[in-house]
Image 1 (cartoon, rainbow, N blue to C red):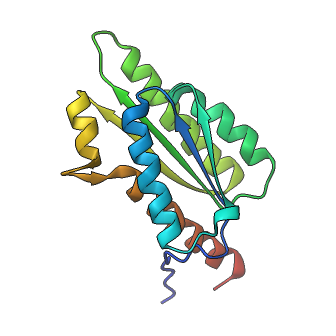
Image 2 (cartoon, rainbow, N blue to C red; image 1 turned 90 degrees about the vertical axis):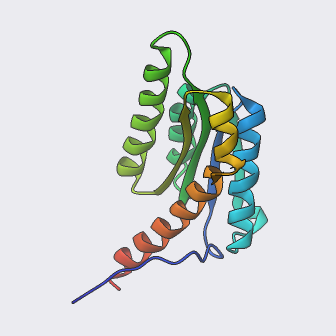
Length: 157
């Protein structure tokens, strides 16, 4: 039986975080968590970048433009979409998720999805370094692990 298992070694990876400024207080904590994870797992500073966009809806187009350059091993999307009184929440969250998933498939690059979809600011805070951990950290480590799996599959290991 052949088994492929990823690692969290980011020492040879080039990684980009695309983060939304909307709800920036929360998102900056997600970015901090993702950056800590990347650095802890060996991603070298000059192979790490952060692109800030206005909101979660804009993550897809900025990520597509960056991926078009072709030198990334992983991309991590970070945002906080908080439910309001209108259906706007569903459209924004769905568009962000679909864009990141589509880009990962199209460019065959590891993606991490750290876009919070919550009902309240309190729930977002709990997931951005509060009692429920940091989803930015989790999205970053997921992207690192998937990048490792993809490298192994490409090398035939």
